[in-house]
Length: 71
Image (tube, rainbow, N blue to C red; front, side, top):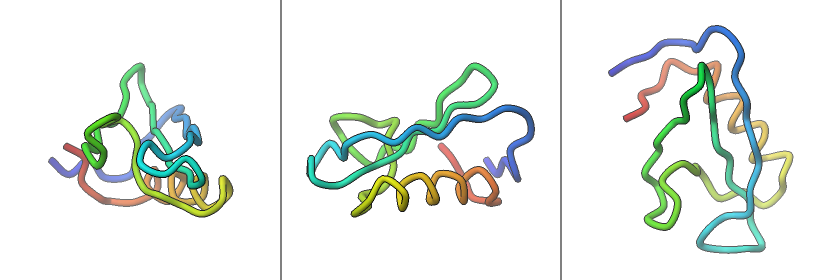
C-alpha cells in the first residue's frame, strides 16, 4: 500500500543495528503505530545499517518524506 508522505507527528529513533552492533538502524513511529520494515529477523521494526547515528537519523527522516511503500 502506498502511503504517500506521512502527515502529523512522527518519531525517528536511532538504535544499534541488530546484525552489527558497530552500526546503526532506525525505527519509525507515527499516529500511535510503528512501521514494520521486516529487514531484520530479530527486530522487524528496524530499518537499514548505517555507519553513524546521523546517517541513520537522516535515512529515517527521508523515509518519512518519501512516497515509498511500507508493509
